[in-house]
Image (cartoon, rainbow, N blue to C red; front, top):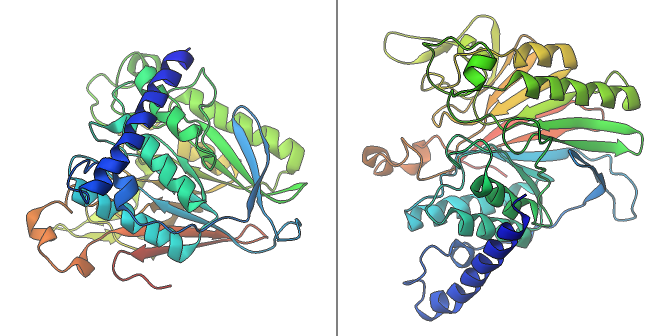
Length: 388
């Protein structure tokens, strides 16, 4: 629907990016300061992952050996969230340099970004720059929308932003089923061999804020305010996708979910103490990290977590709340806050924190290593306390 307009605008912006390079180079970065593509030093990491096939809503990938056979090595996913690329170019460069360095250090097979990453007034240009940066690194990646990227459910601006990602040769994103909320409801299937899925990854557009007509259609109480929720139609799509995969690959199939806004069950994990700190509830097992601020997700429970229990989903990963960076096991499922990666984020841009010892900042990336048998190893890496 937006194809021709998108094509024209994309090529115009690519032209702008190309014209900025000599100006940036000649002025030693004093002009065209928004060009993080030149400012950030990237290392070509490369990948042993191969795309086996692709459908409208899904991509099938596998980690391969040099001889072309399927690898038995762990498949590593690196997650981060809330990069908040915005109007402070110096902080943008620091944010993206950190991401590039962590990818070089950890050498993931897939990078997952869970929203609120490209927010600047040059958003469309920065989306193309980011996709090119990831192409230079040479690692596959995916992206789900947060509540800040685009002020629309569907539309030409949001479409073009996502199209700039999808057109990148290393991006595995899909627009997804047109009948669903937003853009970016899709799956990635990690194969162990031609007949075995090691893990299915499910990605959702979790929306922005409660709005019509969804409030009325889904029975959201009229007085309820705040963050959006996964729509029942998205849950039905997810359950259908899993059911069809189980028919083909076996009932033992397990999955992971990625979105921006946390589901309401995250509120069941910690108790807030009188001094403002948080203590894990007795019914959870803390794997790593801390809760440092109240959960900012939706108050409306559309039933995604219950659907996860029914369908063999082992973990859910979110962003949105910048200060929380924990992983807990609750009711048989891992609930994870991806580590925030943006220097422009609230709390990090607070002057008192920016003036403090950087090693104390709650900031970094986290990884999920998926073994051949499907077992998971979850770990976090703090910003300046990174261990190889």
